[in-house]
Length: 148
Image (cartoon, rainbow, N blue to C red; front, side, top):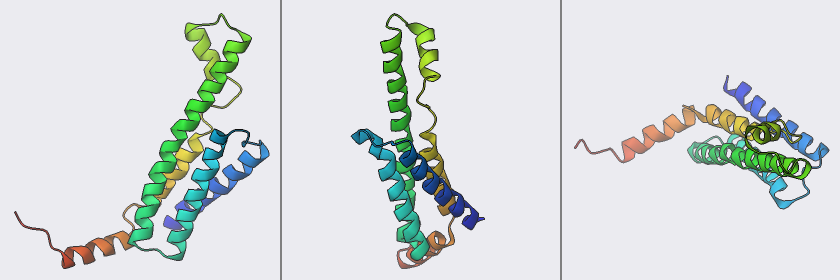
């Protein structure tokens, strides 16, 4: 099951990078954020594949949280882009009609959610990983907790 989760995450990374390249998602510095996040995710997964140990798994977990949270930046940027466009084409639009048209705008609001998905898959991959349990067992034998 763990290998399937890893495979799904890696497919998500490769497919997303390909799509971002195809749509030329690189016109402004903020558009490079998903490339950076996906590169960090790929490197973290690569490290875990090559050297599955407690350190590589903890780094994977930290990177996956960052990748997942970065999807919020994308949702915000997409929303603001759609909002700006709506203000340009219909300057008098306000309230719910403006929000509705912004949500349905040309830039897909939920597309950055793929970063959230990759992050969750990475966290799921590392959840109760045997190498983390082994490291915890060894550290508890070396430095036992006080019974107080």
